[in-house]
Image 1 (spheres, rainbow, N blue to C red):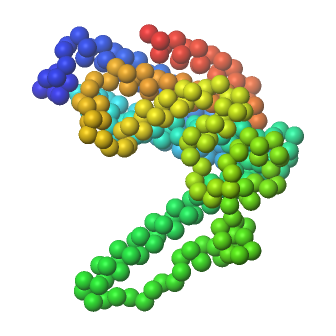
Image 2: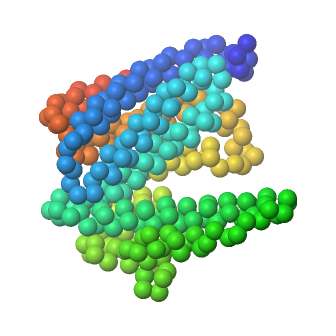
Length: 298
């Protein structure tokens, strides 16, 4: 007998089964639309640096497909939401990143300087995180080598190697440039709204959401709510274990909201993305969106 049948009554299980089926049908439709949307971008020359939005959508596409593969496991055991929620967390994080970067797009700027500067900061974050991971791996390898006396010569200063390969994000003193230095060529309007001081650290989700709010993007509160809830499945606390054992009525609402936010983002990005048959894509979105939102409200 399945976990759900042992721990929850038939009426609840039947209701959630129907709601999961409904979610899966709607999500399949959105996923198929997203795939056509991405295919319509093939061979199209985007505004400078705006290929980043298509890369983010591609990530969301594969996370959504992964969620689809795991959703059927919830029919027997609601506890698999632990893994599924982390996938949706990745989707929401990429939606937040998309709106954050979208907020720096200036259609009158052919070089998209502000957007490129934020992408450069994301690149620096990736490098700095990679360096930490490589250094940790090197330390562990040296520990393993010390156990059998086969210590190999040091492979060199990994941070120095990365700095040599990325001189545009290194200052004259050989230090990583701070974020405000990398933004110096951005429009002052964006610099004032970003208002992140002289930080050299990672841009937090909270900072991204503040910028999204400052840019007048209305869904910032829902994005924050979704991100915070789904993040509870990444971070451990003893009390949070109770969430694992609970049913998924609220989680289904969260999944629907995630899919709904993706649908809304796709419309926002149509403002500047170049797509083959764009008018047909827009027409399809106009038909799809109300049907999806209406189906989720049932």
